[in-house]
Image (tube, rainbow, N blue to C red; front, side, top):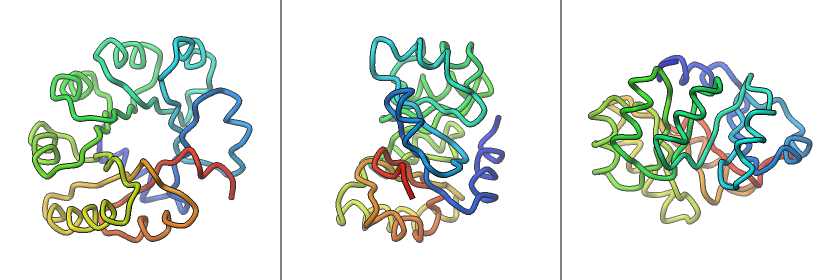
Length: 180
């Protein structure tokens, strides 16, 4: 998969919320058809859960190492999220025809990720009005490079619509937005 195909997922869907789940049981809490679900790889038994989950619209989050990315790729998961930008991790995913959506917060991180080929980045955290204003500025500044953002960290029922209205934000991710 490449970034253009990934962006198409959200261009074609009407509901741009990625539910972030922490367990298989959380799947039962989602009451809408999600284009993509992010399962967070945070516990020792996460590998077992990942092996048992339907991979159709599954992505894995909190990828911190190349070994975790290898595990995902070897098990049919080619979309991953990271809370940070790690050049080696991003390059590994690119080299293995997979998408890593790295967490970024500064303009330098955005440009470093873009310069190796990352086209979609996770703006993290987006938990305050000040951070939302930063995201708005980044969307304007980086528009000519066609960089897209997925906002996560603090997304809730009161702010998600405003964030989705920001130019270049293609989706939001949240563990709070499981029911609509």
